[in-house]
Length: 370
Image (spheres, rainbow, N blue to C red):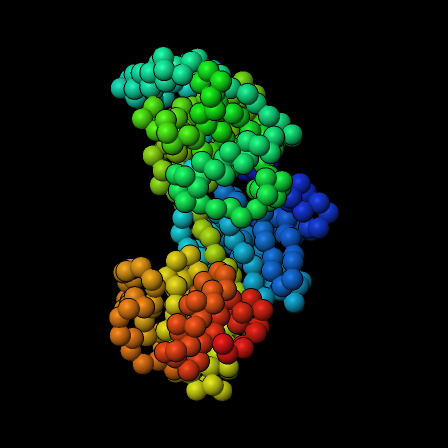
């Protein structure tokens, strides 16, 4: 049975995430057996392929096997997988760090200038507020520190999680947390998921009043030192373009995200468009949902004329408009947002006769006009 470095990454451990609610599909290729877990829920399948680069034939056979064995499945969701599929997935990145054995080796991965700046920031913070210390929490992360994290995220990023601390820890599979203090004052907090010797950094935040000392970066470095003490082997950081993720010998790989739809889904949509007389359409939303749609746009026979988004965006080979601009004629508009939005619905219904959610059409087979 083929094994992967990512097997113990939390998002690949379906036994821990879904309990017994998963199965495995095996594909044999060139004498090797590849076993991939799948979780089925209401017409959707998720695969535990985060970061795993499979032989392309194996991946495509896996997709075919899922659709063949689960006729009720409308789509398969790929999250940070190592394989594309018929160019219908969005390209992203995945970053990981091989954890060294010692703190000294960790710091040697920084340029001398960066080591000096880190030492200087720590010294200045300690001189004003007291010596730095860390408190580690395992399974029982205090809710008050999750609330503090929420508060700091609102202040620094305007993020409102709209969930309880208990929900946050469960939904993001947080197993551990590290609180950093200067004297008795909380400076930063970091949440992570640890399975055996594989860690995944879920998120962290810091007291923005101390921003001049780079408390977020200090928290991250102390977190890495804690992983060394725990004898961790790998740290996964997800994707993105944050500068801190590319330090300490980080490795970056190309991965793919998005949805692979059953062929019958496109046949349904095309039949519906023919019946409704939809020959030219637009989409609203050029964020994640819009990007995913653009990767399968050629499967829709009607002409995609343009896109609309509240922010000015440029998309190759597609005219784009903001809601304040005059919009060209179209037979219909598809909303590609991941969530329902009544304000946008009302705006579009005043300008288009036929308005639909792509999520309803593709994922649920619902063709209700708004």
